[in-house]
Amino acid sequence: MFLVDTNVFLEILLKRDKKEDCKKFLDNSIGNLNITDFSLHSIGVILFRYGKEEVFRKFVEDIMPNIKPLSLPMELYREVVNVRKSLNLDFDDAYQYSVAKYYGLKVVTMDRDFERIKDLKILFL
Image 1 (tube, one colour):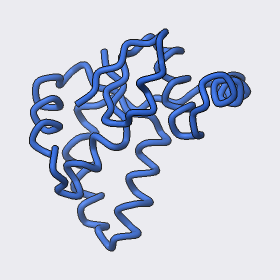
Image 2 (tube, one colour; image 1 turned 90 degrees about the horizontal axis):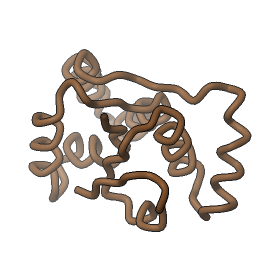
Image 3 (cartoon, one colour; image 1 turned 90 degrees about the vertical axis):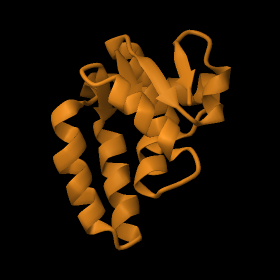
């Protein structure tokens, strides 16, 4: 089971260089995909900022039936601060790490900040 980081989706939605690799991974992993609520909101914020509201609507319609949204239980939010301090991650990476750890998921990302993570499985695209 995978927790797909925000940057994987944005690579596709914003038509960046590695979009084909990201699409291939998602297509081959249907049924094993998860996204955090934070990633979903971040994608919305970024797409709206670029005036791509319809891209967001299509994303929600196309991908959300095939991916499970996850949240960190409220009582574990203090752990995000501990993760930030111990692993020197920014908030979004610390949140992704915390969710992946809680649910026992492998993180799929292009973010090299995850290279310092040793206690979770990380798949770099």
